[in-house]
Length: 314
Image (tube, rainbow, N blue to C red; front, side, top):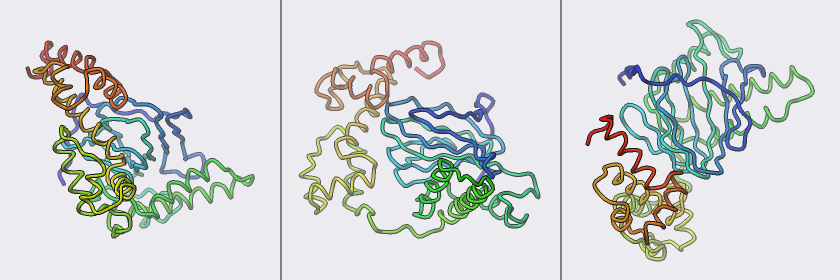
């Protein structure tokens, strides 16, 4: 895999900490975990805009999606990150999370790469080097999380929130849990993905059809019959595949396709609403605010300004 060139206008994202409603971002280094300066859990109650393209010099970023349908951009590509998926970005590699939908839930950490010959988590030099090399040279950036990896994220945060009266014991437990997380992370890309709960080929075909043609109508009862499932079983299978119910996924696809049309500036708002089967421009505006956090007029106006300034092609 070729190394990405650093762009001059890419942000270097600073490390900061907060304990708010949407994000809990903590530093594990004072708790005996020398290689994780940032450990976070996000649970978004409202739509937030995506983040700017950025890098983390000297750090590998790991994100585990728990709920929601996320999109990450890197290497000139967009990667759909569904519930149960892990996305990894390497140091000096420009990337960004394209959106932060309402209901999004994810774990995130920064792994600090030690100097050559440096050690992490009290491991030997060879053991530390093995983990660092494996993470740096991973052949895939998007993969399924194993049950072991998901449990390791949960346990590490639980230990952080429940410090023992014995500080030394707490540090040892934290270090042990972080080591387990690193081993699970190294293992996960190569672990066989369990077929239990995996969407059937029929469900996958339906998801692909809705993605390609969100302008059509898709009654759930008809889709369930097509997938040879009850409506409840079909909805659950669809949620495992996308993180959304069928209706929510259809609306999400319609909104994003409508937003792409508005950015082009060739179709009126009412025309876009009709094209993508919204019942009215007001209905489309409500969906835009719920999913993108902005109205159709705001999105259209923003790109018209950029186009007038010559920052995007007409």
